[in-house]
Length: 136
Image (cartoon, rainbow, N blue to C red):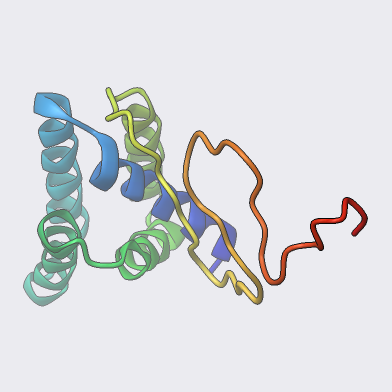
């Protein structure tokens, strides 16, 4: 499974979870649910995928597992791959809240400090500040 594709799908879903508002956001979730119902025909498989969609939508569950399931399906189901791609393009255009969307997904390994946010101002530092004598 391509981790880059998983990360892109995760970013799209995270944007929907954290920012899509109003009726457009609701419609995007409904279209994802419909797409999953259609693609995952077996009852058990469909139920598992639908439970993941619902857990991400309502409980703030990590999007990575759902993204992996969707990308795995798209890897061998060309119709689903086409629908998923179109869905991701559509959610990019949804109205968003004004807050930041921060994503660390896939197989990302953060080994040092990580700052995520929006509209930073002023210095950001980690560790001991330089001496106040003007020379580092």
